[in-house]
Amino acid sequence: MSEIIQSSKLTSAPAQPDVRLVKMAEFGAGGRSTLGISLATAAAILAAWWAVSHLGLVPHLFLPRPDEVVRQVGNIYRDGYAGASLADHVSASLFRIVVAALIATTAGIPLGLLMGLSRWAKGILDTPIEFYWPLPPLSYLPLMIIWLGIGETSKITLLVLAMFAPICLSAQAGVRSLPLERVNAARALGASRLQLFLHIVLPSALPEILTGIRIALGVGWGTLVAAELIASTRGIGYMIMSASQFLATDVVFVGIGIIAACAFTFSALVRAAEALLVPWKGKL
Amino acid sequence: MLKVDHASVFFAARDGRTVHALDRVSFDIPDQGFVVALGASGCGKSTLLNAIAGFLPLSKGSITLDGRAVTGPGADRGVVFQKDALLPWKSVLDNVALGLTFAGIGRRERRERAEELLRLVGLADFAEAAPYELSGGMRQRVGIARALATDPGILLMDEPFGALDSLTREQMQELLISVWARTAKKVFFITHSIEEALLLGTHVLVMSPRPGRVVKRFDIDFVRRFVESGDTRPIKTAPEFSELREEIRAVLHEGENLRSAA
Figure 1 (cartoon, chains in turn cyan, orange):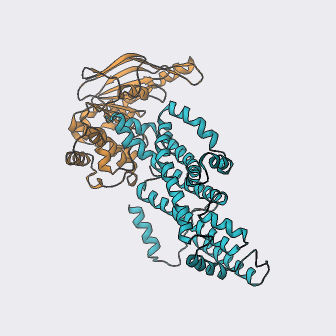
Figure 2 (cartoon, helix red, strand yellow):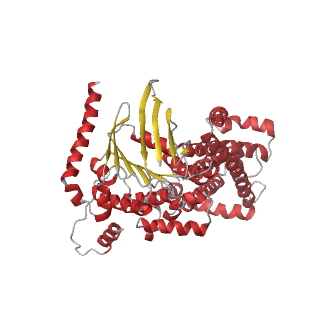
Figure 3 (cartoon, helix red, strand yellow):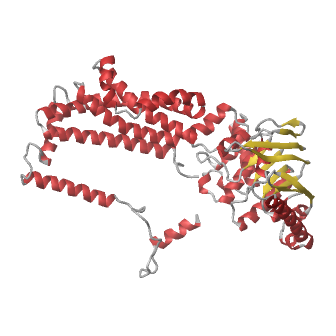
């Protein structure tokens, strides 16, 4: 505590402004903030886009101007695109990914915990998971369509399969990384098997589970757009696909922007959940 | 009374050979006794503690606490680990009250008893702190309070001060002795420091490796003087203290030499 107070005094009230503050040499990127650099890079990319499109260095068909893309957002918002409103497209995609995430989480967490706790569960479940998990979801999408049709079921099943494995494997890893001393301490305090699970195993595995959910959402967005590109009448992926058939690159840009915004929001939500649920992550 | 009777432990090593970790160890800890197991690493002292705690079954022999055979871990034996195994998601108070939670004791009583124990170890002001906000010595105090919460018959301490700096270590020794004097618990304490063993123990078991066994037992009473005066310096400089220290050092080295000759 006293160290913190002292060091904040040093930086907030420099009694000797001419003194040279030093610190240990860092290696690599170090721990300093990169926010300014990142914002400058974003601004540079936008400026380059604007310059290239205005000067006509690239045919307009390939690269719309930034202001056209912004205007197109307004147009699609007002008039919809490809037979559905913007809200329909976005909510169709969000519905699929949220439902799939809920199913994958409800199944993945208990099964993953079980795999961490029981040799039999691990032995049995490892085989199918290790077989299908490395496969690209698009490779078994045709099977999903043949078995389940082109409706919502096949898309959501595909998403569930893609998102289940990272959640399940991270829950398992969470149990396996549990230090034996923590378990023994609880046993020596008289914990029953159920108490051991609720008070020790579950909270210990929570940080890894949340990491797994974040990875799963990333995989989910990738898989979702791919699924909508192939068999769909609604969704952001479908919107991009039909726009590309009319060479409407500005609409493609709008679709990409929406996906980026959604994926970023989801990731930020999980990070907020991490800050709320496991503030102790990485400590002790 | 804790009674360890001809306790032997054999492990299977990774290469398939059998390791004789503990060889027919017998001793007992009378009520209010403070027994220190002293020895170099590999002498089986942690194995012995794990067996008493019930984490490890014996290959042969038996352990009984107040007449009941030890068959597994239980709240009648409080364990303090070398690396405190505190739960980072619980406050200091809830960590101390963990054993009471497991026993199904109500919230208010849990709080009262945990607060009392925190006062005993001098951490009353840190009840709501998170364990990772505390220093190493403070965390070990939480560990001691937690182990005492279920009112166990004996405290088992596995080199609890081994990772602390020497100043904190002396403070913790004083704290432990005052807690021991006030609660009148049996203690089984592991260390590789001869001085710590002499200062704290009523009985010192000098252990030797391969196979892990007790080579000599000393019954001493420096700790009584420690309790009375609360000051370690006159004890440590007393001639009988240094004599005994040299004698134990000789016993320990003898064990080492025998091993390297074999």
